[in-house]
Length: 343
Image 1 (spheres, rainbow, N blue to C red):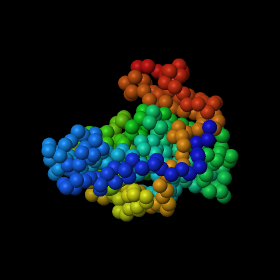
Image 2 (image 1 turned 180 degrees about the vertical axis):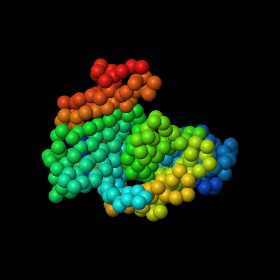
Image 3 (image 1 turned 45 degrees about the vertical axis):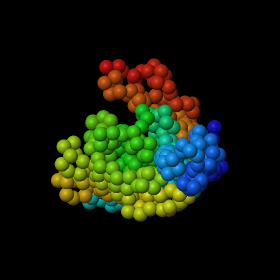
Image 4 (image 1 turned 90 degrees about the vertical axis):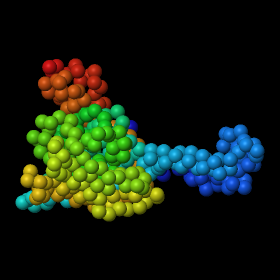
């Protein structure tokens, strides 16, 4: 089953357009007493009983609330972003990646590509709403540009995958992926977060000891669809010092959407003053549709998958499963694996 379809325009926004049109066509006070107007809005009105100004206010309020709900959930929720990242660890030479991001409402996929000395590493992180998946492999063809779904030159023994519970990509050490997630795919997650606690940015294996780590954070969102963060400041557990800073310095507007064009992520030393590492993302292309049809990655061949969907107290270690088909394991199948060790 192919994951990529021909480019399609994002979902029809006729409903949104109609609500805007209605909001602009609400009758003025002189017309509000017309008996034909009430039934049009599902109301039973007569000239002698209607309050024209009150009716206009009520209808405007209902339409504005409806429009806000439509905008918050669906307007501009489908797009693609392409760009590059420069990672600058303090005291070391920078590393470079390029990326593709696909967003369709609450579903998303991030492809991170890095060219090594003799191969190309392709990492996929995605969510279909049921689970979060990671899948990466080595590609031996460095002459051709990266093409989604083209595995002709993939090293068939290099496929490694992970399965996680839905929501936030916990246990992902690739900070650049977390940066891209918050920059472009976090609307649904941030809408469901509470108490000022959101997923942490991980940088090193020791960070994994905290499990599904949440950190105190201040999130400032854009006022324009699709309502992505303009700035996020993460703090230590005592909320005394900032540990990370994500900030959008430039935007691009496409088809009614305001999307980040330049984003930086800073990590600070433990002394909370100097910068430990910097990630800088710059967009090269944006599309106002999503050509990715399926958000569960394809498994082209033999692959080892670590299943992280179980709660930490349930297992000593997550099971590692060897897959020889293109089907991701169910929870029941993972529990039958030798690596599934119940505490």
